[in-house]
Length: 217
Ligand code: CO
Image (tube, rainbow, N blue to C red; front, top):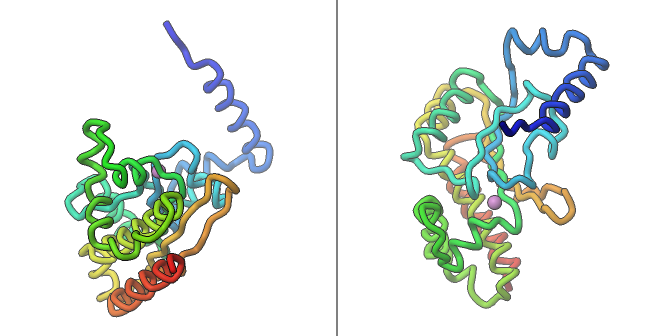
C-alpha cells in the first residue's frame, strides 16, 4: 500500500507550527469561517491562492479551475460565487490569471489535448472577440495579452451573474477585481479592473480593453 508519508508528516508539522503561534487557532476556526475574499484562480500548482496573498486558513474562500474560467452554466463555479456572496457576504472577489497559463496557450495554439479542449473553449471566444488586440505582436506578448483579456472577460462574467446583480441592487458592498500573477517573480499585477456597482461594469470593461490595447501598439 502506497502512503503519502511525507505529506502527512508535513501536515503534522504545519499544524504544530500554527498552534505554536496561536494554540486555539484550529478550535476557533472549527466554529465558523468568515472570509472577506473570494479567489477565483487557475488550478496551476504554481499559483496557490493563500500563500500568494499571505492569508491564513479561514481568510479566503477559493475556487480554482483550469485557466480561471467563469462560465454562466458552470454549476460548480456558480455555487461557489452564490455561497460566497449571499451567505459568507465576502466584500471582494478576485479573478486571478497568470502568465504562462497552459490552458490559455493550448487554446491559442488550438492544441488537441482531449476533454480539456472543451473546457477552455471560452478562451477561443475571447481570442475571436479581441482579434485586433491580439494581432501584430510576438507570440510571447500575444499570450500575455490573452491572459490579461481572459481575466477581464471572467471579471465581466462574474459581474453578470444574478448573485452580483442582486447584491448590488440590494446595496450590498462587494467588488470584483482582475489580477494577473507572474510565476516568474511571484508578484501580482493589478489590472485596475474593479467593479463595485452594476452601472460601472460597461465602462470598467471598456477601459480595461483600451489599456490592454495600448500595450500592443
Ligand atoms: Co493556468
